[in-house]
Length: 195
Image (tube, rainbow, N blue to C red; front, side, top):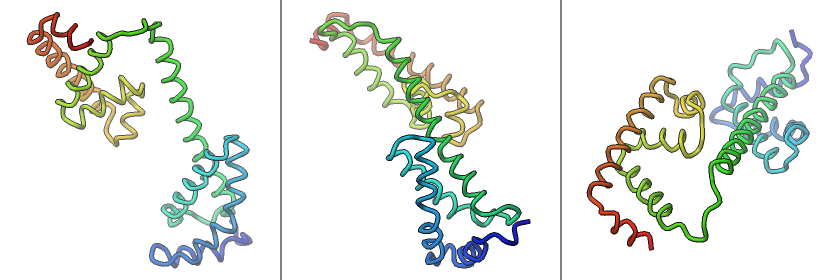
């Protein structure tokens, strides 16, 4: 039990006021804000990421304080929320780095001008616009952004099987649209359009 928790009276006031009153919540943020920022900075080593993590922490506190139990000190719970916010930022950083690395590995040295590549990219983007928005988003997240199926499912709040089904359906639609476009354009037209 944490009956001697010095934050308990303030936390109870915050709970009593939220969501309509915020004076006690603002006091809680002032009291713990610099500590949360310092902890986030010690993990992330970036001022902007530490600021983002701090905002995420206090948003999570605002939303989740009703579920907090006084079994441990509030500062302990806040420390866990801070660690989780930092983990999310570190995961995002790692995913961004994996995408950058994958693009660098897949991108050959391009000649000074590659009009056909540019034309193909523009065509694929135009064809993507013809695909239903939810399916298009899954395709972009999977094949352009490099997210895994579980990551997409979590972000879009869908089941993993629903994400895989959309990706498969979208790939078939894109392939059909591409084949249709290829049949309606002569090779010379494509070359002229790329110059």
